[in-house]
Image (cartoon, rainbow, N blue to C red):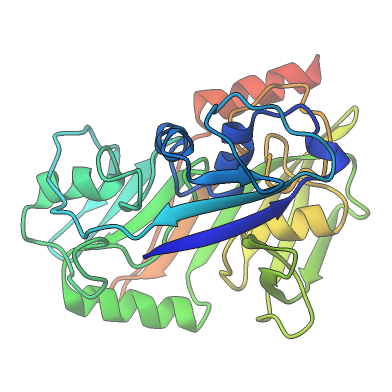
Length: 306
């Protein structure tokens, strides 16, 4: 058995390598795994089999990409250093680096945050999300850096999940976006669901789930804005989709930049989960953690200031 994905190429992606394009569309798959599937003749362009990952796309090409069903692997603990902001018997707060996948997925069964926390915690992780996602109660994208909660008990997992469902945690992200925002502070209240033209993307759509993002401009540059975004809800790709929807996509976000050129040559979106606040499951005390901007983010700010 396998799953097929279909992509229609627009002018924005002319001359892009096919492996890079598919990687942008399916961020949970590694580029090396995509290249492997291409060489295994699982990709067609305009009904012709393509076996070269470097194949160059043309306008109006149609890609069919076949991903075979995966055998559930044994997820192995790996001794990967963790930046731990806080830890007790119930939970941990991790500062996740840019480029690290949170949980295993096809093509990413090693080197994930789950591999690292399994090594660190042993069997002291919540099991509610199963073997592929022990301890994971919420997630941030591979190329988003910053604070992430890890649950070490099922009790903590249920508590944090209920808080997330009730929109109680304080989650503030920092981002660099194209252009100047319409107001110094504002709210985007627009429903998000699967993009009807590309099921691997999210979009503002009628009938989607309500999504609310509050933003504040921290500093303006020529052609760019440095902003803080507070999540009232937590939909997949919410900030990325909302910023793109209002015409101010996040710098480096290949999936949602709508063809804008990235002068900073980022590897993924310039988005950092800076602050997270929540009620501790056992003590019921409010806790809040703030992370410094990572080096890559600071470099982007230096580039756009120049």
